[in-house]
Length: 173
Image (cartoon, rainbow, N blue to C red):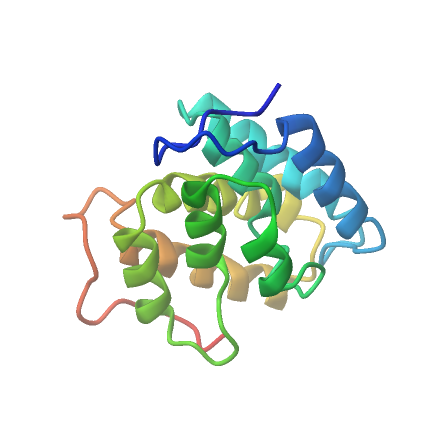
């Protein structure tokens, strides 16, 4: 059974959510996070975070794949040809940060893509989890805490007005 009917109204067959998860697990199998943990644990947490925030199957699929293109474990060509809904593909593309890309430009693309903000919110929540940050050296934990807080601000995920702030506090990473 496909993970969801294509939102574009077409009758194209799409992968099951289990197939998407399996592909993501295989693609990231050798990868470790900054603390040395299996990277797939992050993907699991983001997918669960999307589900817990009310995201449907298209966004859960995007959560499993959210870092695949950016990390180079799956290509843009693979994504374009994959049996995924266009919405899932659009969200994965929006979440794929380009080398050297200004964080504000990245945030604007996320905000312009339906569903991408919810996936990024789940991603940031897991990345900023104090238990994960505690496994890092202090300078890295501080740098990442600032980076994640700045992105939350760019995306309007703080108590402040949603949107892109003019002069947020940020690190250059």
